[in-house]
Length: 246
Ligand code: DC
Image 1 (cartoon, rainbow, N blue to C red):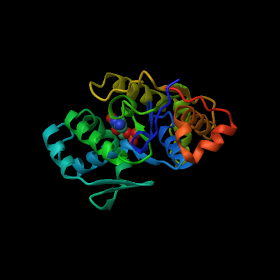
Image 2: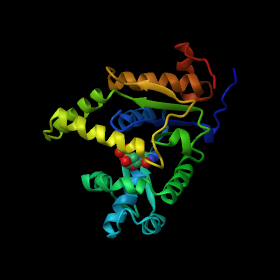
Image 3: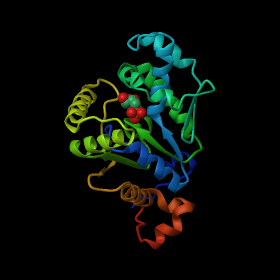
C-alpha cells in the first residue's frame, strides 16, 4: 500500500463522464462537503463560445476563436462565472451557446489554453474539477478520479424532469433521440473525446438519489486521499473507510 501524499497541489478530485450523468450538481455538492473549490471546466468552454458568438466569429474559425480566447479573463467564483469582469453565469447557458460549443471544444489550441487555465486555477488549491478530460488530459496525476455514468434511459428521464421543473414540456422519446445523437457525436469527436482514465473509479448513478451519489463519492475520496485531509480525517477513521491506496 502506497500512501498518496496530499499536499495542496495534489488534492485534486476529477469527475468526468457523459452529459446528463449529473456531474455538475454532484461535483458542486461534493466540493462543498469537502471544503474544496469547484472547477466547472465546461463553463470555460462556454465562455469562449459566448465571446466568439458576440464577436461575430464563426465557431469553426480556429485561429480567430483562439485569438478571442487569449483575450479573455475568466474567473469562476462559487456558482458565478465572470468573463472580463461581466457576470455571464446565465448568458453561457443559452441553447445558442450549447449549439455552437462543439467546434470550440474541438479546437486543440483552445483546449491547450483552457487546460493551462485549469492548472492555474488548481494551483495551491484543493479542487473538485468536472469535465470530460480532467482525469485523462488535464490532471493525469490526480490522486482521486471518478467516472460518473448513468444509463441512457435514466439520463433522459432526469433531463425530462429538469425541463419540467422549468415548465418546458418535451417528450421522453424526443429527449432520448437527441441524447443518442449527442452521445454518438461525442464518441466521434477527434479531440477531448470522453474517455475513462485507467485509474478512475466508475460510479453508475442509476437508481441513486443525489445525496447517495455524493456520499458514495465522499467515501471514494476518503479512501483515496482521506488520511491526508485534516478536515475529514476523523470522520473517515470512525467509518473505518480508511484504506489509502493508489
Ligand atoms: O459540461 P458542459 O455541458 O457545461 O460542457 C459544455 C461543453 O464543453 C460540452 O459540449 C463538452 C465541452 N467540454 C469539453 O470538451 N471539455 C471539458 N473539460 C468540459 C467541457
